[in-house]
Amino acid sequence: MLKGLHAAKGIQLVIGLITGIVFGFLLQKGGVTEYNILIGQLLLEDFTVAKVILMAIAVGMPGIFVLEKLGLVRLHIKKGSVGASLIGGIIFGVGFGLLGYCPGTVTGAAGQGSLDALLGGIPGQMLGAGLFAWWFSTLDAKILNKGDFGKLTIPDLLKVNRLVIVIAMEIAIIVSLVLLEVYA
Image 1: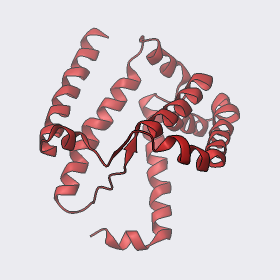
Image 2: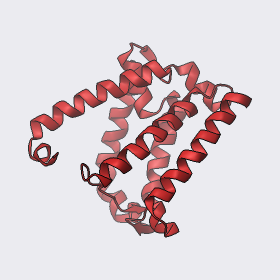
Image 3: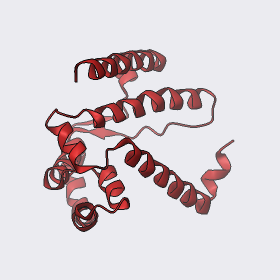
């Protein structure tokens, strides 16, 4: 059904743009483009960010599972490694630590006109991406493939059906959301 989209690069760009706008709109409406909300999460005083992330997973995980089972999408599992996770974590952590935004929320905050995101976040993303691209060949040769664990997924690791993981995650998320609502 969706195979025609794989060949239509122009349509892919339009779909990507629309998806990005919708994603940014939902982030903004969820309140997670507000600096104070993000800092509140880091200080464990405001759990809006956790709730939004958990709800996104609670909707997205079974949605992707069903779409795959119906043959409408094909999962593209990428190989992973400890080295790539380490470098990605450092880049993400430095950016979050310096500005208090993650990549999605800083872009959403810039879209709503937040000057800290516009003047610090967007240039910071460009600088970080540029530095990563500049150092990529060195990082790839020396670090990114260290501790390679291949195309491993949680169901593969636990040797269970994907549906078991989806159901377990849904239960864990519902319990977490209830606990956050009651106690946080």
